[in-house]
Image 1 (cartoon, rainbow, N blue to C red):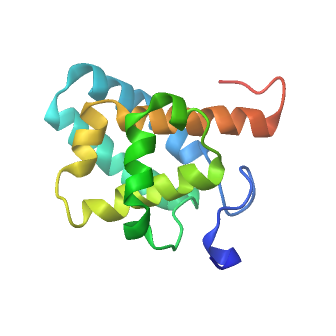
Image 2: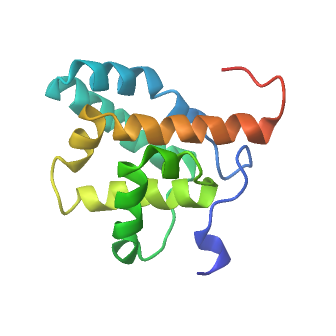
Image 3: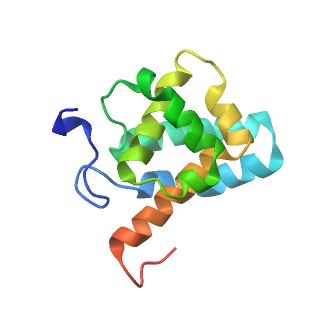
Length: 134
């Protein structure tokens, strides 16, 4: 993989977790409610934030779908994922939506996308060190 296709450090000029972390309240509400209209609104905001974050990368996401599924289905595995895996997972989810309509809404409704963004929050906190806020 060429170096331009891997995410830079969190907080760098090119990669910012904050746009995605700002989606947490919407993702939480949508996951708790199971309401498709809330999920649709959360997905649109999430898509925009993902593009703004710099975490979407250019790689062969089709070959990585099995790993993405494992991360989404196994919270323990997801909780060990690093920034590169989270970036690949976000990219795979966004790209797959083009071929599987409603896929992101399903990930929101069942809480899987919420867990991914929470993992990103954990990585962001760790990158900033002790004393980092919420």
